[in-house]
Structure formats: structure tokens, C-alpha cells
Length: 262
Image (cartoon, rainbow, N blue to C red; front, side, top):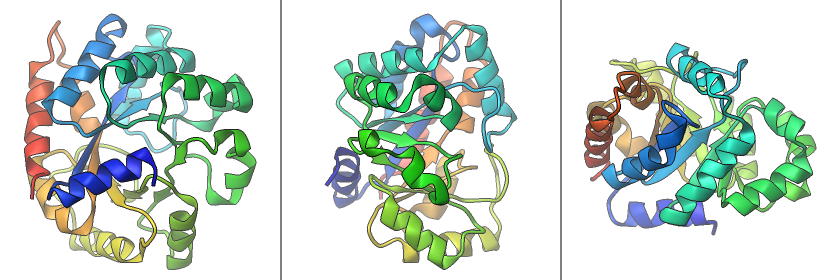
């Protein structure tokens, strides 16, 4: 069992759903990013996803796209992102995942990337724009040392969900809604029914739900149909109000974390 899967398993056995928080590498302040990440963990995050800023990312809404722009304006690169993870991992013993479009990884070089990511302590990879049809071409033997988290969507048929479950390690990322990332106040019954369906089909892995989750209330609604949740846009949005401090962000993470307790 991988470190990520084992971590989620332990949380679930202790009547807790896993809370994974997405942060854009270097946002909002490059010099303080590692401190922010560690404070987010202390506030209640069980895992972190560090997003590599990219100008043409897949399915990211305006909030995360804007954070990517801010980080790119600070010249944040894939190597910077790995350096951040290395420093975070030296301070905190929780799973840290790298989320990136495939292009920066290809440009870095798959073999070189595998070594650099391993040296940095990356536990898992989320590369949303690599479909299962291209899985073997992208995830070469060099990348077998990492968990590979694949994504289901509301339009994924049963056969495809089964294949995603088979190929994934660590957990399966269930995209809750059709469209782009972003906070949502309400979810239709169709969304709930599709999440139930997907959860019933995932047999090998744990399943975490992402896209739209922004409050303790939404976490509570999904808790019986998942093993954890991923929150990104709501946290990033709160950081846009950053004026030298991020107490509101930590309060939000604390609220989300409390909702993960059964």
C-alpha cells in the first residue's frame, strides 16, 4: 500500500475523511510559500496538492488561472515547485502531490523529471490532460515510483471508470461536475447521483471528490459517498485577499477540516 493510500486508510479508520488542499506553487508570495503550506497543514490539511503554474491549463477556472498568472509573474517554474515540495517535506510528514499539465513535464524531460521529483519527495502525480489512452506513453517506467492519480468525470461511462480505477494508485480523483474548477454553493441531485454511482464502481482505490467544494456544508453532503475531498478554488480565492497575512485562509482550512470529522 502506498504512503498516500495508507494515509487515507488510517484517517478513514479514525472516522475522518481526508482533506486535500490545493495550492498554486509560489502564490501569493514566493518567499513565504513554504511557510503558508506548512501553516495550512497545521490548520488541518491532511494532504497537499502543489499546482505547477501553466498558461494553458485544463479545466481550471478563473480563480486558479489568475493564481497561475500571479505565480508566472514571479517566474515560478516546475523546478521551483519541486524545490518548494522538498522544503515542505523536510518539515511535515504528510503526502504531497504535484499537479501539473503534461507540457511542463515533457519540456523538463520525463527521466530528468522523475529523478528531480523523487529527490524532492513527491508522493504522487496528478496530470489531468493525460487520458488513459496515452497513459503508457506518458507514465514510463521512470515514473513508477510515484502514485498516479487519474480523474473520473460525470460523463465517464462505467467501463472507463473501471479502467481509471485499475490504472490509478493512491486514490481516484472524482470530478464532481462538468466544467471548470470553482466554488459552488449548490449541487444538483444529478451530481449527487453520479457521485454515488462512481463511488460504487471504485473498488481498488480510495476516492476523493474535487471541483466546487468550498464549505463544511458541502463536505458533509458528500462525506458518505467518498473517502475525502479536494479543495482548491475556495482556498486560492481567500488568498487573493492576502495583505501580508493569511489568517482567513487558515480559518477556512480549519472549518473544512472540522467538517471532515465523522
